[in-house]
Length: 152
Image (cartoon, rainbow, N blue to C red; front, top):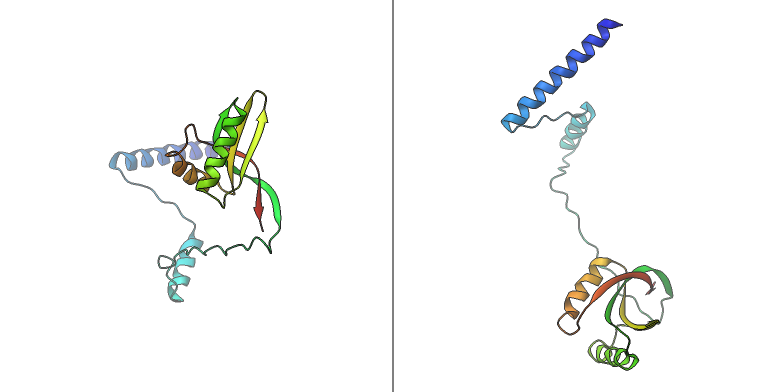
């Protein structure tokens, strides 16, 4: 039992020394399962080169709103106004609607502030891209996560 423990400690020390030397030289030690090599050889024999396979993006089908159903999901909206003036909130909503007729707007009142949020985005990246576009027209533009309506 003592011999097994000493052998284990010896192997552990040897492994640590080898790794330390590899790091000093800037090298990398790769340990891989033999099945990986067998799989690579099989794919090469079959003429399948994994380097050549490329992921392609499938373009999203345009959704026809009249034929789709509207569902509520967790998503993102861009806030374009927050303040205590009701008139200013509706003014900002009207200004936005004149610029973007096809994007929905929402006004909420959380005492004492009105908030105007726009869009129904499934991903944060879409909302962030739209937020960057809106920054030239509106002050204090932010992205919020909340329940949004999307068509399926």
